[in-house]
Every structure is written in structure tokens, then in C-alpha cells.
Length: 123
Image 1 (tube, rainbow, N blue to C red):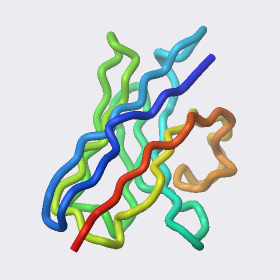
Image 2 (image 1 turned 90 degrees about the vertical axis):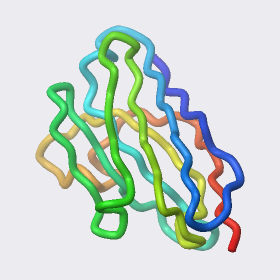
Image 3 (image 1 turned 180 degrees about the horizontal axis):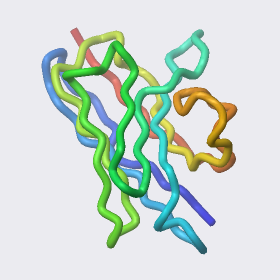
């Protein structure tokens, strides 16, 4: 059972990037997937998440700029990031949620994590 994030890179402020999270393994096609990020010297924070039916949650500071979506045939969740600013610079991780009682944007809700992909926004 794996999660693989990709799509990170270097972009200028105001630009866009699209991240992908490919899930594989038994049951992965129905997983509730979240995106998190961790900037240097800061704690990991929740960015957005989506369930199998397509219900979405966003952190306040990305609302209106980021869009999460999923392709259940490809077992892939996407994070379209627009109007990027330097504060979006971080390693971005995707994860599979296991605890549905906790806040969906907290790390504690998630049981499986992929390796991160680095997003660097230059000024």
C-alpha cells in the first residue's frame, strides 16, 4: 500500500503548479486523501482533503487558490495550486485518512503517508 506525491517544482510568485498523489494497494481507490505541507522550521499543516464522493475541505489560507480533485479510476488525487506566494513554499505530502472522528486537516487523522514533493515559490 503506497502513496506517491509528485508535481512539485520551482515557480514564481503568482504562478501555478499541479500536484498529484497516486495511491496503490487494496482499498486505496476509496481512501479519503489529504494534502499537508511542512515549511522549513514550521509544523506540518493540513492544506486540503477529499473523500471518495468528492466532498472537499480546505484550509483558510488556500481557499480560492487551491483546488483538490480526484480521479477514482486512476486512484489519483490532484491539488491544483494557483496564485502561489512565497508562503506556500514547503514540502507537500499526501496521506490516507483513518480516523474519521478527528479534524480532517490534522495529521492525527491519517495513517498512511507518502514521500513529499518540494514546492518552492520564488519572489
